[in-house]
Figure 1: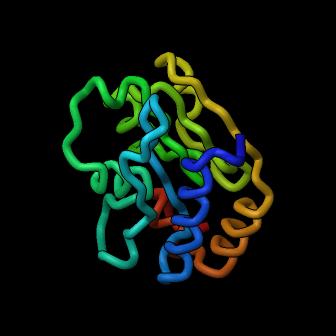
Figure 2 (figure 1 turned 120 degrees about the vertical axis):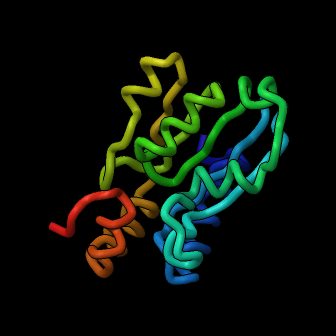
Length: 151
């Protein structure tokens, strides 16, 4: 599973976001026939945005697509998706969400499953370490990103 191009792109996007000084989360949307439709990374810090999480950035970069394209697609994301990003996957009826890691944060995985979306968690240790380090070094940005007060 981890050899999938979508996962590799999401993984690289997560690193790119971290290198830019942002939250290191990446995403990639791949069609049912294996075509990369879009990719992106969390841009909240870089763009001063309230909503540019990785999955939203990915969807934005994919541009306008017919609803049918999403229905067979897979969203690859380096971290379990928050409620906003979960909602976007549900709204567009993606078929599957592949998550790099969910040890540092568990988002709307159960809701995705309730809506009939397949959820696969890869438990990637490098992504776990990347997020753990970011959360430790930038707690204020992390808690802002997930809509919580700094703990």
